[in-house]
Length: 200
Image (cartoon, rainbow, N blue to C red; front, side):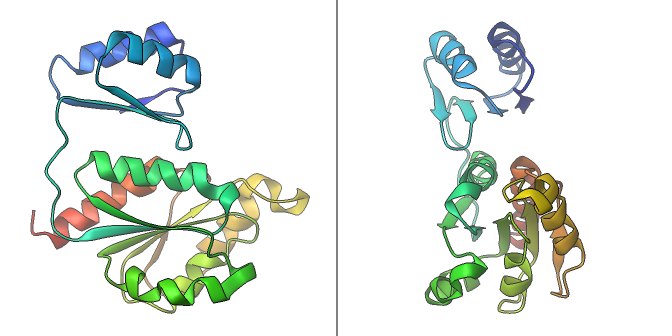
């Protein structure tokens, strides 16, 4: 994995080339379009996921392990972080089910998706504002849940701090919390949990 933020396109291309000497895949997170352009120019199989701000280079995808990961997103504004988690989990060989726009402001949208959510081995729940969605979901399922606060919200959200504190104080059982906007961390951890569920 390469964290693209703060790096020049040339630096990212050189790091990716070095990794690919010993590995078949590279994930570049927080990659702006100019990095993606440079990667696509250098590597014919580079794919850029614009919403996730991720670039993926792989000779061939990993085979999908049994079970799936559900990435649940409160609102459209949270999608970049949710997609970063989803792409990370997919690159690591997981099937990802996406459930979008089911935040607590429209709780009726979550309930019809409950059956899909309950089939997952592990859940990644992404939300900004007050960060309530992970607590709600944790009360409805019996699965490990990774909560991801985002920096989306008005002034009193303090750039995601309100959501982070809300998630850390969740009364829902089985809720683990990653850093603000840390979609990669959540996707990676979810993949490890799913690998254990698959007996790896």
